[in-house]
Image 1: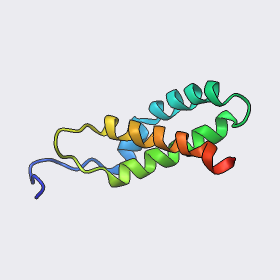
Image 2 (image 1 turned 60 degrees about the vertical axis):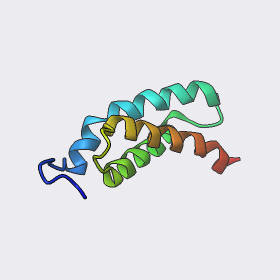
Image 3 (image 1 turned 45 degrees about the horizontal axis):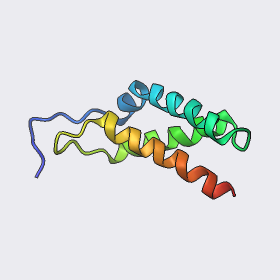
Length: 85
C-alpha cells in the first residue's frame, strides 16, 4: 500500500533532472568498449534506461530515484554489447 502523503514526481521532471547520470556513464563505458560503440549510441541507450526508470520507479523502502536510475542506465549499457555482437 502506498503512502498517500508522498507526492509522485512527474516522469519528465525526473528525466530532466538526471540526464547528467546518462552522460557520466556513457563516457565511462565509451572508454571501456573502445571503438566498438560510439558515444552517441551509449547516450541514446542510456536515455532509454533513464526513461524506463522514470516510468517504472515507485518510491518505497527508502530507495532514491537516483540509485534506481543508476542501476537501469548501467544495465542498458552492459547489455548493449551483447546485442551488437
